[in-house]
Image (cartoon, rainbow, N blue to C red; front, side, top):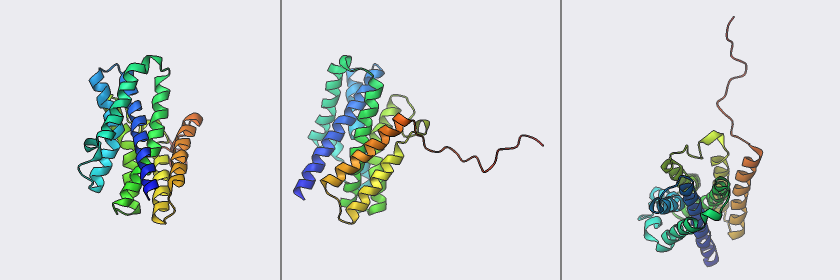
Length: 215
């Protein structure tokens, strides 16, 4: 159990860092000042966790009480502030970092929901909000359509699949660090492959036949 808790703690710190990187890069792309950059790094890194903790009643949320979590998010912002001139293709980097954070946050959020006894179904929603929450707030703050709604991209679908797998394995006592890592890698792979192959979620159903325009 201690090994599992240590692994999850390290995983959450890594997720916060990667999400903070994506938030700070979004701020650089918009030419925001240093305060706004750090704010976006913090919001992106910890926004999903804040939503998660409020949903399951784990208050006050760790996103405002844990100095290690806050410092990790801010450190990501500082690194981007000084090193961004050497980073090429910011848009691609944002997507990769966001996908990595999504994968880790989904697993972490679902497990924490199960630990608080919310049940497998509720834990799936908790994991989903943990995964997409930070990116959702980030995109709204930089005045962009949230990535979870943009162009029918496969973003929430891999997150939901990962949350379901995590909840099922925890419920049946099959979860361990290797299983968690495998689920996170699967979410990341689904996200990146869908972008590479330009896969999209189905749009509104148009019916069985073509719409008639006249007689």
